[in-house]
Amino acid sequence: MLIILDRDGVLNEDSDAFVKSVDEWIPLTGSAEAVARLCKAGHTVTVATNQSGLARGYFTLADLEAMHAKMTALAEQQGGSFAHIAFCPHGPDDGCDCRKPLPGLIRQAEEALGIPAEGAWMVGDSIRDLEAGLAAGCQVALVRTGKGRSSEAKLAQTPELENAPVFDDLAAFTDWLLSSQH
Image 1 (cartoon, rainbow, N blue to C red):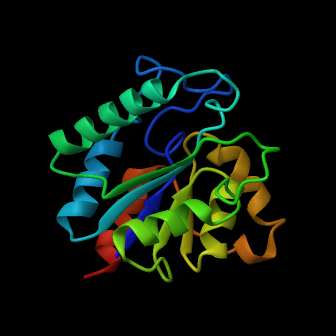
Image 2 (cartoon, helix red, strand yellow):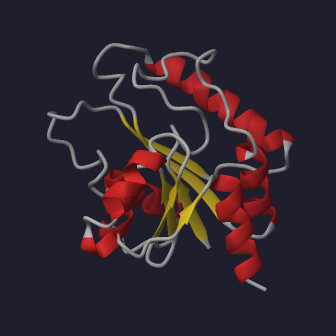
Image 3 (tube, rainbow, N blue to C red):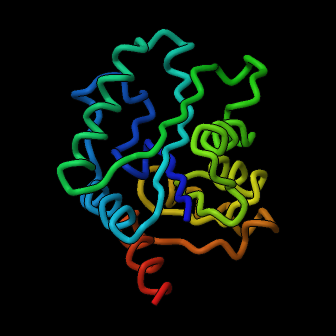
């Protein structure tokens, strides 16, 4: 099964000031291990992340690539991998089709991997992550890390999301998913 993860707030600590460098990219406890567990269970793990800091000039593409290399290396050290990393480099007013809550990043992953997102899981820490997942036909889950705690209160205000499962973090989602598959 395809598992699509938001990055900031799901795999690493989020920052209102943006994660701008490899040094600021700090993994959340248990996230790399969770990715590895998902991979070892036969899931295909991808990342779909808005990175408007590129458009805003807060960091360069080389900085982003270094952050993703660190993220990938940490997952690989645990025996996991990312089949694809899709990112939106645009700002909120650029009119692109890839910035979440639009499903463009998920469509990019589908195309790159040849795997449909219909029925896949989109795991995020914000309402826009879940809305992108719904728009692509995914099942959605919220984690309380990153912006998740503040997003959790908004679930009840969004009828199509009010029954979305909520987990403390990616490791808890992984525990639930893997235990429900047996």
